[in-house]
Amino acid sequence: MEEDNQEQKKQLLFAVWHSVNEIAKQEAQTLGKEVSETFVTSLAEIVFDQMQTMALDLEAFASHSKRSVISMEDVKLCARRNDTLYQLISDTAKDIADEMNNRRKKK
Image (cartoon, rainbow, N blue to C red; front, side, top):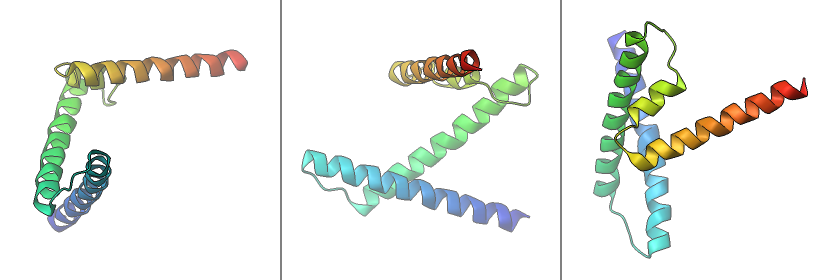
């Protein structure tokens, strides 16, 4: 069981590294810069750690509200210290709600 968890964690970390690597390369190319393997690896580890922290926070927010499902409000609460991220999430949540309302009206 523990070995399975470790394997899943390695696979997830690799997926995060791959995504970070692709984004970093694209951004570096746009800026006419290069990124080192060490930089990408360090950034991927930071992103992974932040993802783990966010996952625990989301679970805690839902649990505190006596729910087993994480809501959009939990996600927004997680992003409350980052104004730009909070605004992006809020706008996206509004777009999703509007689209759902439009679908309901069509039925």
